[in-house]
Image (cartoon, rainbow, N blue to C red; front, side):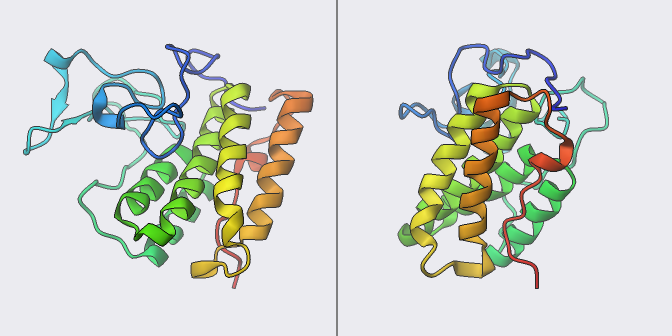
Length: 203
C-alpha cells in the first residue's frame, strides 16, 4: 500500500510541482518559498546558505516530508556537488531502488539545471517521473498521475537514440502503466515495489 503520510491529499495550496523546481503553470523556483510538500517556512525563520539563498535544512523522510529538527532523515546530495550524467543516473537509480524518490528527484533536478539545451527535456522528464512516484508515496493520486504523464511525454522523444543507457521505451511503458493503474484503482493496492522505477537498462 502506498504511504499516504502527512496531509494525505498532497499539496496544501492545491498546486503540483512539475519536478523541475517549477509550478506546472510556470510559477517560481523551488526556493521561492514552497516545495513539493507545499511547505516552506516563513521568510524570517528560513534556513539560508552562505550565499544568502533560501534553503530548507530540515531532515526529510524518503518521500520528502520534513521531519523534526535533529531527526535522522534520508541523506541528501549537496546542491553544489557536480556529478556527471552517469553518476547522476547511478545515484538516482540507487535512491529509487531504496524507495526514496524525493531525493532521487533532487539529484535529477540538479542534472536538469546543468544540462545542455538538447537534454533539458530529458532530465526534466526523469525528474518528473520521480516526483510522480513521490506523490504516489504521499497518497496524492491526482499528482502522481499528472507527473507520470508529464515525465513520460518529455522523455519519449529520446526513444530513438536513448542517451546514457537510459531505458526510454521501458520507462515510457512503465509510467503509462502505473498512471493507468492509479487512475483505475487508486493507490491502496500498490506495493512499495510498484513505485521503484529503474532509469537505466541493466548491464
